[in-house]
Image (cartoon, rainbow, N blue to C red; front, side, top):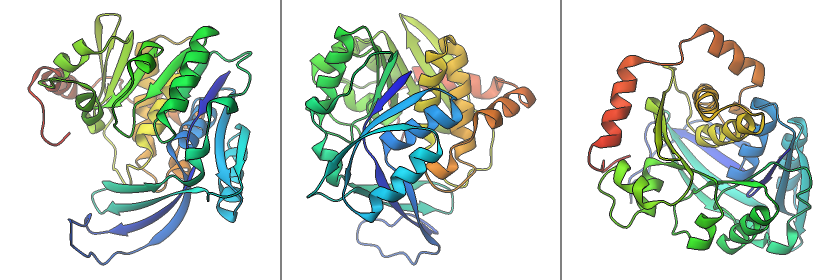
Length: 315
């Protein structure tokens, strides 16, 4: 069983030709709301896309937004441990999605900031604890320490990027970051390889968008290319990757297979709009993997080149 602890937000999404620059006003198009939040997205991905027994610890306000999020989680088969905040509203996120499928996100955490160390439920039967950084860092660290003490493997998606206390990293078994987040954690970010050398974590997985991902696992490097898809909206692609990765690891798949499944899931999530609404099913992932090769030779070389070259200014 997997326990996800983290954020839940209602996403307010507007489509626009491009993401506004500072001081710029852009006339947008379609507007919709979707259930989201990194923690909630990853819980749905574990359950729906990863077909894993999933529980989710979250904090919600006492408002209509909370009901929308709870319905989505229930529909995915996620068992919830809800901390109800009578004062703070349910978290929200304001997302602009451009015509080229990129996004810019601003989060108002609300009730997410009320998640405290004492709210951690029993870890009996839990194999993996998956967390992110949209809830207080001290809470995340406390949960990690409790999990480590009980033999539960800790997976941390260090997003959004922020400094991490050494005690949290010391309790982390698997760290998942994108390229920008990896560089943010390093004191001397010259290349991805140099950054990885600074991190004393057994397994570090780095997502690299349309190229795929790479990992350093116990000193060995692994590379996984991403399939070519027609992207509509990249929102929740990284969260889908994290959820499926952990689900696969909890089902005793090796890291290489888990990376392959997670990369396919993240790519498929980009073909649909929204956050949780875009997360594919386990059957869709399996069907795609049976019909498409797991390695693209050209992308494989580009991945290795990206790993070795100096820092990119725009990850």
